[in-house]
Length: 346
Image 1 (cartoon, rainbow, N blue to C red):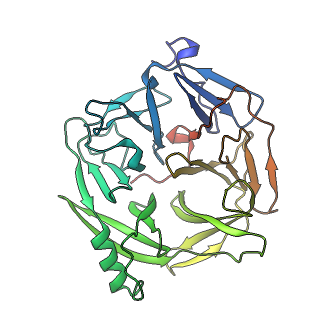
Image 2 (image 1 turned 135 degrees about the vertical axis):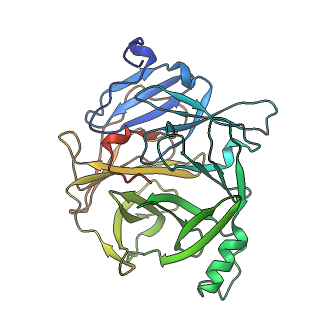
Image 3 (image 1 turned 180 degrees about the vertical axis):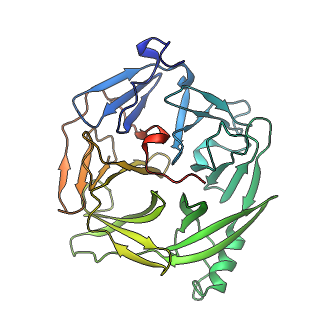
């Protein structure tokens, strides 16, 4: 289907590296990390008047929202950038701006695929087990989260009524997240219908911070069946000046974090959606066009450059600005076919 379309109405052919995609009105701008002087402007019919909320980790699909009537309802669809397939999801009584993350239990073309949404306001985990003609089930997790942390002795001094679960990832068939205040990795068990169990697993690691820096962001990511934690250090709260990225890998047997000194066989990719206050990230094998042992990322406030942090050397490289990008502030997202990633399918 994709090959039959005019070039301007389909994405560039898939490569051994992800595309960094910006949205600009009716257009989508695909940026090549192998040549930052090269961009491809496309107008893809399926994406007209839609907003990309997430690139689903491990399965190569993107979650889009579009306007609806009444406005408090959210219309959602999944879109595959390689096959151009679009799957319309059941309507959801929720504003799209509150959807922060999307997890797929398997490829959405499989009949048992579950779509899991993490919502900020109110704090909910929403899931649908039949994406064609099913319905959304909403679970409020605050009470269960606080009770589980209290039983584990993690919040004896304070009741974290504003606690949230951030950065959900699937690893080895299990669903994990990070607590926003407790800095704890938790495992989330979805017990249907409409029931959750949350189990604290291990504290989030924090690197030694130099006097001139601060840990601005802590993220978790799955890579090839392993769980990684990123401490991103900056010089101020704007998030514009990153000084270092310290990475840890979880030893599941001992439940201890091991500092990653080198990762030559893979590269990590991060993008930050500052409008939606979320991020997406994944890893893929090192290739001719992709330098292993690196973290590729973009920054806030409409920066049009690609940054690369070498894990082993601790050096930060900056590309020349991408051409043809929107003049207005726009948060990009990484897009890559599922079969080219390091991932572990549930």
